[in-house]
Image (tube, rainbow, N blue to C red; front, side, top):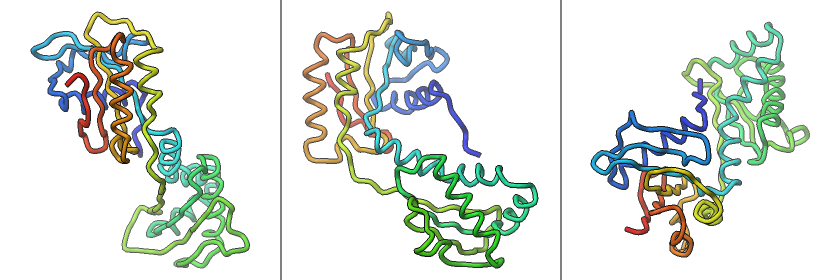
Length: 246
Protein backbone atom coordinates (compact mmCIF):
# COMPACT_ATOMS: atom_id res chain seq x y z
CA UNK A 1 0.00 0.00 0.00
CA UNK A 2 1.31 3.43 -0.94
CA UNK A 3 2.17 5.62 2.02
CA UNK A 4 0.17 8.83 2.05
CA UNK A 5 2.26 11.71 3.37
CA UNK A 6 1.11 15.08 4.61
CA UNK A 7 2.40 18.30 3.07
CA UNK A 8 4.61 18.82 6.12
CA UNK A 9 6.06 15.31 5.90
CA UNK A 10 6.86 15.77 2.22
CA UNK A 11 8.51 19.13 2.87
CA UNK A 12 10.61 17.72 5.68
CA UNK A 13 11.81 14.81 3.55
CA UNK A 14 12.75 17.14 0.72
CA UNK A 15 14.56 19.51 3.09
CA UNK A 16 16.52 16.68 4.75
CA UNK A 17 17.55 15.39 1.30
CA UNK A 18 18.68 18.79 0.00
CA UNK A 19 20.35 20.39 3.04
CA UNK A 20 23.51 18.23 2.83
CA UNK A 21 23.97 19.33 -0.80
CA UNK A 22 24.71 22.87 0.38
CA UNK A 23 27.11 21.59 3.03
CA UNK A 24 24.81 22.03 6.03
CA UNK A 25 24.37 19.44 8.76
CA UNK A 26 21.13 19.97 10.63
CA UNK A 27 20.21 19.14 14.22
CA UNK A 28 17.21 17.03 13.22
CA UNK A 29 15.53 17.33 16.60
CA UNK A 30 15.53 21.13 16.19
CA UNK A 31 13.40 21.15 13.02
CA UNK A 32 10.17 23.11 13.38
CA UNK A 33 7.39 23.48 10.80
CA UNK A 34 5.09 26.30 11.80
CA UNK A 35 2.17 27.67 9.75
CA UNK A 36 2.61 30.83 7.62
CA UNK A 37 3.93 33.45 7.83
CA UNK A 38 6.73 31.23 9.18
CA UNK A 39 8.87 29.65 6.44
CA UNK A 40 8.50 25.94 5.73
CA UNK A 41 11.49 24.93 7.86
CA UNK A 42 13.16 26.47 10.91
CA UNK A 43 16.01 24.63 12.58
CA UNK A 44 19.55 24.79 13.92
CA UNK A 45 22.52 24.05 11.70
CA UNK A 46 25.47 22.41 13.38
CA UNK A 47 28.29 24.92 13.60
CA UNK A 48 26.32 27.96 12.43
CA UNK A 49 23.16 28.13 14.54
CA UNK A 50 19.60 29.12 13.52
CA UNK A 51 18.61 28.55 9.91
CA UNK A 52 15.34 28.89 8.00
CA UNK A 53 14.43 27.51 4.58
CA UNK A 54 11.45 28.10 2.32
CA UNK A 55 10.82 25.45 -0.35
CA UNK A 56 9.41 25.96 -3.83
CA UNK A 57 8.80 23.40 -6.59
CA UNK A 58 9.60 24.50 -10.14
CA UNK A 59 7.99 21.63 -12.08
CA UNK A 60 5.30 22.77 -14.49
CA UNK A 61 1.75 22.08 -13.24
CA UNK A 62 1.06 19.96 -16.34
CA UNK A 63 4.02 17.73 -15.53
CA UNK A 64 2.91 17.23 -11.93
CA UNK A 65 -0.67 16.46 -13.01
CA UNK A 66 0.45 14.04 -15.73
CA UNK A 67 2.69 12.03 -13.42
CA UNK A 68 0.22 12.07 -10.54
CA UNK A 69 -2.46 10.67 -12.84
CA UNK A 70 -0.08 7.90 -13.87
CA UNK A 71 0.61 7.09 -10.23
CA UNK A 72 -3.12 6.82 -9.52
CA UNK A 73 -3.63 3.97 -11.99
CA UNK A 74 -3.06 1.20 -9.42
CA UNK A 75 -5.40 2.91 -6.98
CA UNK A 76 -8.01 3.11 -9.74
CA UNK A 77 -8.07 -0.70 -10.02
CA UNK A 78 -8.72 -1.00 -6.29
CA UNK A 79 -11.45 1.65 -6.34
CA UNK A 80 -13.25 -0.11 -9.17
CA UNK A 81 -12.87 -3.46 -7.43
CA UNK A 82 -14.29 -2.15 -4.16
CA UNK A 83 -17.48 -1.06 -5.94
CA UNK A 84 -18.27 -4.64 -7.01
CA UNK A 85 -20.19 -7.39 -5.27
CA UNK A 86 -18.23 -9.73 -2.97
CA UNK A 87 -18.66 -12.56 -5.49
CA UNK A 88 -17.25 -10.49 -8.35
CA UNK A 89 -14.37 -9.31 -6.18
CA UNK A 90 -13.40 -12.90 -5.39
CA UNK A 91 -13.71 -13.93 -9.04
CA UNK A 92 -11.51 -11.04 -10.22
CA UNK A 93 -8.91 -11.73 -7.54
CA UNK A 94 -8.71 -15.34 -8.68
CA UNK A 95 -8.50 -14.43 -12.37
CA UNK A 96 -5.89 -11.69 -11.86
CA UNK A 97 -3.49 -13.43 -9.48
CA UNK A 98 -0.94 -14.02 -12.29
CA UNK A 99 -2.23 -11.22 -14.50
CA UNK A 100 -0.02 -8.67 -16.24
CA UNK A 101 -2.13 -5.68 -17.26
CA UNK A 102 -0.68 -3.10 -19.65
CA UNK A 103 -2.85 0.00 -19.95
CA UNK A 104 -1.93 3.37 -21.39
CA UNK A 105 -4.42 6.18 -20.96
CA UNK A 106 -4.69 9.79 -21.97
CA UNK A 107 -2.34 11.74 -19.71
CA UNK A 108 -5.14 14.08 -18.65
CA UNK A 109 -7.32 11.25 -17.37
CA UNK A 110 -7.82 11.81 -13.65
CA UNK A 111 -8.69 9.40 -10.85
CA UNK A 112 -12.42 9.14 -11.65
CA UNK A 113 -11.81 8.45 -15.32
CA UNK A 114 -9.16 5.86 -14.48
CA UNK A 115 -11.48 4.12 -12.02
CA UNK A 116 -14.22 4.02 -14.68
CA UNK A 117 -11.84 2.51 -17.22
CA UNK A 118 -10.60 -0.06 -14.72
CA UNK A 119 -14.22 -1.01 -14.07
CA UNK A 120 -14.69 -1.53 -17.82
CA UNK A 121 -11.55 -3.66 -17.92
CA UNK A 122 -12.84 -5.72 -15.01
CA UNK A 123 -16.16 -6.19 -16.83
CA UNK A 124 -14.23 -7.68 -19.75
CA UNK A 125 -12.11 -9.92 -17.57
CA UNK A 126 -15.22 -11.39 -15.93
CA UNK A 127 -16.63 -12.59 -19.27
CA UNK A 128 -13.38 -13.62 -20.95
CA UNK A 129 -12.19 -17.19 -20.81
CA UNK A 130 -9.76 -17.80 -17.93
CA UNK A 131 -6.20 -17.38 -19.15
CA UNK A 132 -7.15 -15.06 -22.02
CA UNK A 133 -4.26 -12.97 -23.35
CA UNK A 134 -4.39 -10.09 -25.79
CA UNK A 135 -6.14 -6.79 -26.37
CA UNK A 136 -9.01 -6.07 -23.99
CA UNK A 137 -10.94 -3.75 -26.31
CA UNK A 138 -11.37 -3.71 -30.05
CA UNK A 139 -11.48 -0.63 -32.26
CA UNK A 140 -15.25 -0.34 -31.99
CA UNK A 141 -15.53 -0.13 -28.22
CA UNK A 142 -12.22 1.10 -26.88
CA UNK A 143 -12.80 4.00 -24.43
CA UNK A 144 -11.78 7.37 -25.84
CA UNK A 145 -9.24 7.88 -23.05
CA UNK A 146 -7.43 4.57 -23.71
CA UNK A 147 -4.51 4.31 -26.11
CA UNK A 148 -3.78 0.65 -25.41
CA UNK A 149 -4.97 -2.04 -23.00
CA UNK A 150 -3.94 -5.70 -23.02
CA UNK A 151 -3.44 -8.59 -20.64
CA UNK A 152 -1.03 -11.48 -20.41
CA UNK A 153 -0.10 -14.00 -17.74
CA UNK A 154 3.24 -14.69 -16.09
CA UNK A 155 4.90 -16.62 -13.34
CA UNK A 156 3.83 -14.07 -10.73
CA UNK A 157 1.44 -13.88 -7.81
CA UNK A 158 -0.57 -11.17 -6.13
CA UNK A 159 -1.73 -9.58 -9.38
CA UNK A 160 -2.80 -7.76 -11.27
CA UNK A 161 0.61 -6.26 -11.96
CA UNK A 162 -0.22 -3.06 -13.81
CA UNK A 163 2.12 -1.44 -16.30
CA UNK A 164 1.40 2.12 -17.35
CA UNK A 165 3.42 5.00 -18.68
CA UNK A 166 3.39 8.74 -19.13
CA UNK A 167 5.51 10.49 -21.71
CA UNK A 168 5.83 14.22 -21.93
CA UNK A 169 8.22 16.81 -23.25
CA UNK A 170 10.46 18.96 -21.08
CA UNK A 171 8.75 22.08 -19.86
CA UNK A 172 10.60 25.19 -18.70
CA UNK A 173 10.97 25.86 -14.97
CA UNK A 174 8.35 28.11 -13.41
CA UNK A 175 10.34 31.32 -12.92
CA UNK A 176 7.32 33.11 -11.48
CA UNK A 177 7.44 30.73 -8.53
CA UNK A 178 10.90 32.03 -7.62
CA UNK A 179 9.95 35.66 -8.20
CA UNK A 180 6.80 35.25 -6.10
CA UNK A 181 8.76 33.87 -3.16
CA UNK A 182 11.38 36.61 -3.35
CA UNK A 183 9.10 39.57 -4.04
CA UNK A 184 5.48 38.93 -3.09
CA UNK A 185 5.60 36.73 -0.01
CA UNK A 186 6.29 37.87 3.55
CA UNK A 187 7.89 35.58 6.10
CA UNK A 188 8.53 35.97 9.80
CA UNK A 189 11.57 34.32 11.28
CA UNK A 190 14.52 35.31 13.45
CA UNK A 191 16.84 32.98 11.53
CA UNK A 192 18.79 33.64 8.32
CA UNK A 193 16.41 32.71 5.51
CA UNK A 194 17.27 30.73 2.38
CA UNK A 195 15.16 29.64 -0.60
CA UNK A 196 15.41 26.06 -1.88
CA UNK A 197 14.02 25.93 -5.43
CA UNK A 198 13.85 22.41 -6.82
CA UNK A 199 12.58 20.42 -9.75
CA UNK A 200 11.77 16.73 -9.51
CA UNK A 201 10.85 16.08 -13.16
CA UNK A 202 11.39 19.12 -15.43
CA UNK A 203 15.15 19.43 -14.98
CA UNK A 204 16.13 23.04 -14.35
CA UNK A 205 19.10 22.72 -16.71
CA UNK A 206 17.36 20.40 -19.17
CA UNK A 207 17.15 22.88 -22.03
CA UNK A 208 19.39 25.51 -23.57
CA UNK A 209 18.88 28.79 -21.72
CA UNK A 210 16.81 27.31 -18.87
CA UNK A 211 19.40 27.68 -16.14
CA UNK A 212 20.48 31.09 -17.43
CA UNK A 213 16.89 32.32 -17.10
CA UNK A 214 16.78 31.09 -13.50
CA UNK A 215 20.07 32.82 -12.73
CA UNK A 216 18.79 36.09 -14.17
CA UNK A 217 15.56 35.87 -12.18
CA UNK A 218 17.41 35.24 -8.91
CA UNK A 219 20.02 37.94 -9.44
CA UNK A 220 17.30 40.44 -10.31
CA UNK A 221 14.96 39.78 -7.39
CA UNK A 222 17.16 38.52 -4.54
CA UNK A 223 18.64 41.93 -3.63
CA UNK A 224 16.31 43.67 -1.19
CA UNK A 225 14.34 40.49 -0.45
CA UNK A 226 14.07 38.72 2.91
CA UNK A 227 16.31 35.94 1.63
CA UNK A 228 20.07 35.76 1.98
CA UNK A 229 20.60 33.02 -0.58
CA UNK A 230 18.85 30.90 -3.21
CA UNK A 231 19.82 27.34 -4.04
CA UNK A 232 18.48 25.50 -7.09
CA UNK A 233 18.36 21.70 -7.26
CA UNK A 234 17.52 18.79 -9.49
CA UNK A 235 15.74 16.83 -6.79
CA UNK A 236 15.50 13.61 -8.77
CA UNK A 237 19.30 13.47 -9.08
CA UNK A 238 19.99 15.05 -5.66
CA UNK A 239 22.12 17.62 -7.46
CA UNK A 240 22.82 21.25 -6.56
CA UNK A 241 22.96 23.09 -9.88
CA UNK A 242 23.10 26.75 -8.85
CA UNK A 243 23.57 28.80 -5.70
CA UNK A 244 23.58 32.58 -5.37
CA UNK A 245 25.50 34.04 -3.74
CA UNK A 246 27.96 31.13 -4.11
